[in-house]
Length: 225
Length: 225
DNA sequence: GTAAATCCATGACAATTATCATATTTTTGT
DNA sequence: ACAAAAATATGATAATTGTCATGGATTTAC
Picture 1 (cartoon, rainbow over the protein chains, first blue to last red):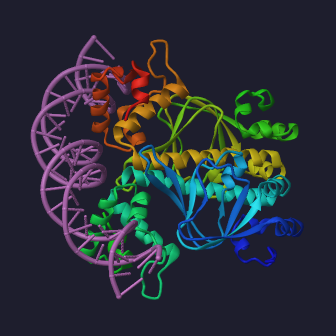
Picture 2: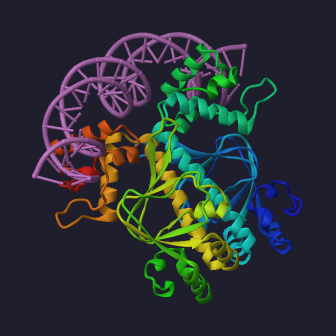
Picture 3: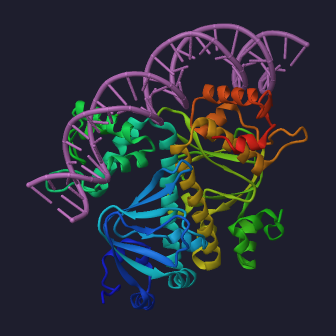
């Protein structure tokens, strides 16, 4: 049905480097899937038979800790590929992918991707660049976790959500994260998130209505000590 | 002088995938450098003109935090490449590399590496795999930072040093890390490291003499809650 | 070999964050 | 629309970690 050659989303990822032939092959074997909010795309430990290209929606990648809590490692958005790392090093998934809202994804079988990686140098170099960027971001995340306070990390994630996912008609953050999700992104207890958000409210930095968050003083969040 | 074709260290990294021609080219243009303990190989923000292949010695990769402290992101060892990420995405270095003991490295110019990456698919796929593995490790580090206590993280880094770098004749950990280094790996204050090590001593888990550490009860460290 | 510098160690105390208990509000399912 | 479930909120308190001060031990440089 839908044709990869015309797909705008593909242009956002390394898949844009594929040649006519290769695109056609993928068009022929890809499977489009709909994933509902809260559903799991794949689980830590699953052996993946391919990668997922996200057409719409947002997804969280989490890792289960020894205490049984989830830690969010990364939020993934339209145009990015899921599962490429596991496919490349041929290992089970390191993370669990869960839809934060309704998603549409294209599943591309492993053999197809691996074949293209080995044959098309521009494609594999592009994937390499993408991964290098991910690695850089992960390194920054390590430093943030190690050195910044919960308060600061929470302010930063709110700004991140604002800058990357924007706001809805009522100017509330678009990505629907629960306090629990925030806690597992920031790496703290849910109560600490709630308390800190209350603090932010008192300070006039944000407003909330239910789980929805609205930024009132962006600079205040940015300049947080 | 020394010939890359014969180099055993090269076999440990993605460079093992290079073909005869390519190796010769590198042999001809590489520069061998000696770096003394404490010296900086490159600094965060430097534009790198090539990558460094580590022949001997250990090196820490750090990032400067806003508070002016260093956070260690990774320890790098013989056979690994330094600076590949910056060269691949053509950006300034994200991290500072500092020798923890005397090192010998081979500097390979950027053009040479990039050429090989674009021409030799097996090489670039091998670099890709390496980077995928680094990314996985970085994700695990994020989770550890976010969820584990200082005590636990310190126990883990001691075990890591033991497993990856071994001990000297007197069965003390080989890598010479100061309490300050430990603090910036674990992501805590130096005093907290000192205090926690003292605690470990009291519990019979380790012994210390000066900055040297000896593991007395490996299982105790492994099973730490 | 000795002084200076650096590093290790520990106490006292403050700040941050976690945990447990318990309301209250919001969302969900029917 | 309504009850049940889930999520948010807040207080009280404990545990962890950070900061500042100070003294002793090692290492380094000349």
